[in-house]
Amino acid sequence: MMHRNLILTCLAPAVALAGCAGTKNRGIESVHQPVVGRSDYQLDLGAPGGRLAAGEQQRLTGWLTGLHAGYGDRVAVDDPAGRNPEARDAVSSVVAGFGLLLADETPPSAAPVQPGTVRVVVSRMRADVPHCNDWSRDSSVDYEQNTSSFYGCAVNGNLAAMAANPQDLVHGAGNSRGSDPMIVYKSIDLYRKAAPSGGGGTTVKAESAGGK
Image 1 (spheres, rainbow, N blue to C red):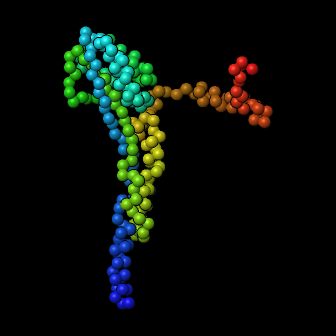
Image 2: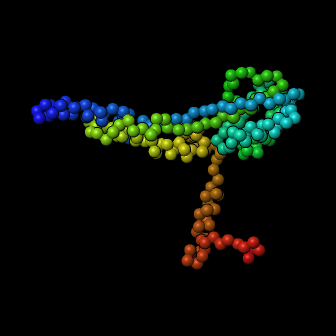
Image 3: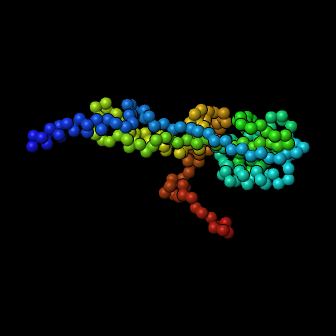
């Protein structure tokens, strides 16, 4: 019996130390934060004489469709010499069909653009929280008063997933687009002028096909 108690006594510090291993969250601000990365996709289009060659607009449309291009993507035309304005306009019209505008600046490319071609570059930002879910720490006694190793994964993971434009997590959206106070006023004015709900004032009634 004494031998067994001795073994348990020796193992007790090891068990306590096991609870101290793993990711340490020493404060309220979690170590698990969203990380924003960027991926660049490139497509070279033939543009002899400064105009897109036949079929290149259709090829660009198919490429953008395959990439599921949409809000948050940044599309630019790499034309260092600026000799293909008509090709740029043609690319712009295709990109507009996806609800996007051409960016003014183009990210650097590893290979130069060949003469008679223009390069379309789609830059896509992605935000995620690395190393989550993190269960590296157990619920043993922690004398350093760390929060759990999973702390921050859920909240910051949802924040990264909800950001329509992950770049806003780095620089913020700012106020470059301005604001229209009339938009806010309209919604408040409609609410104030609506009849009480008991009188059907705030009930949306679907009209029949005949308009009755």
